[in-house]
Amino acid sequence: MSYIVISSYENLDTGDLQAQGEAIAVFPSEALARAHFTERAATLDTAVRAARGSDAQATFITWIAVLDMPLEVTDVDEALEDLETVIEETDTADDPFGELVVAYQGKRYEPSKEIDYPRNEALLDLEGWLS
Picture 1 (tube, rainbow, N blue to C red):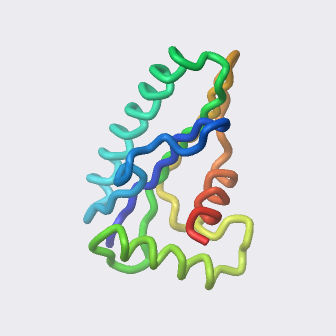
Picture 2: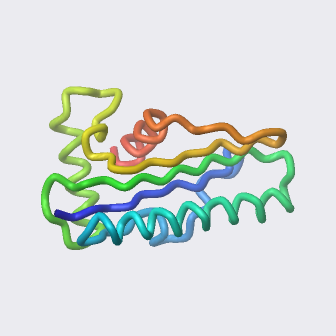
Picture 3: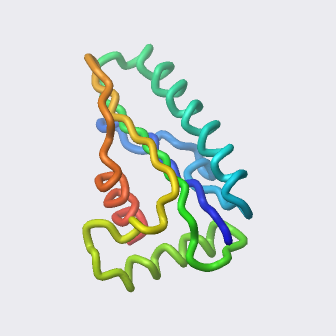
């Protein structure tokens, strides 16, 4: 099996804040994917706190997910192609990746509070990004 870790780091006013190559990574095992998931989640949290220093009124959304790919994938391009196929062949429009999600964490950082960012919203964001 292959696992991918997909993340999003967005300032709602300015858009995606991830550098190219940070949003998706492919792993040959769940253990490696989960280790990256933990590390990337901490990196995203640190990045939001640093960005908050220069833009205290901004709203940020971060989410990260580990997906168990239905087919073996060896690189990011292949993973993206497979996810597009999942979207095309799934009858459940509101949660096409539901069965693939092994782990998920999402937060919405508003100026006055932090709240959980719902998994279904993150997966719909992912679907929009892939379409």
